[in-house]
Length: 88
Image (cartoon, rainbow, N blue to C red; front, side, top):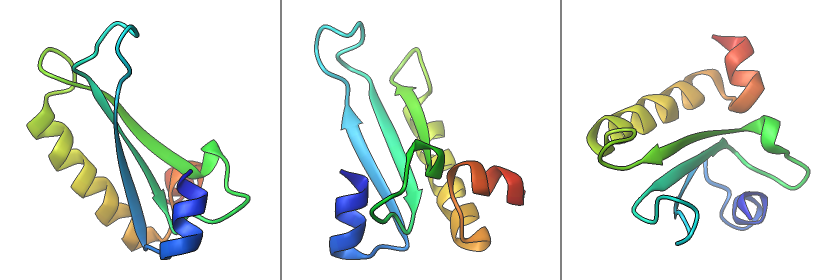
């Protein structure tokens, strides 16, 4: 899905917020999936995720701040996923 959105919109950084499905243990939780310039052919190794965002898990305010910091890092290093980890 991120690759398709990336191909269509060509964002520098794509942040996809997804609520967890009911029945998976935390229906009030969400995850932030992130990628730098996603395109067809990218894999999970090209992405980052912040998961378990909910009161009692990853604090929503802190997670939001971390999402912004990570997006800034992606823009600075022009990478995400494993490539970003190798660049920093």
